[in-house]
Image (tube, rainbow, N blue to C red; front, side, top):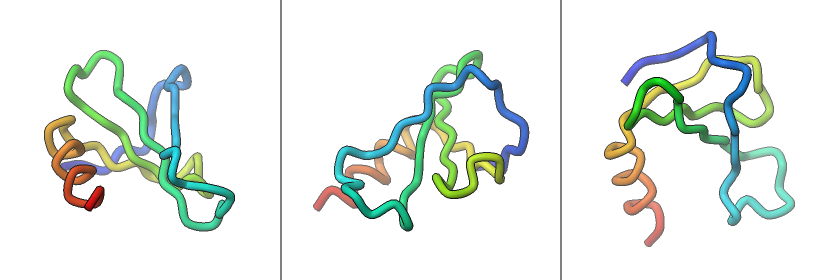
Amino acid sequence: MSVERPAPSNLSWFKSSYSGANTTECVETAFLPGAPGSVLIRDSKRADGPRLQVSSAAWARFVAATWR
């Protein structure tokens, strides 16, 4: 896991469909081009802030654990 500051400007960030109308507590994710199997995560309120980079396997485990 690493913290990323710069990121390509052509990323397609997305939020969970479960985010609803609450815009104060949300994260966005993007698949990192050029790094297959990597996911970037950021705070939706701080789009220019730090980004967390994790493997797609780690992200899948996180999502599966929180889905319950």
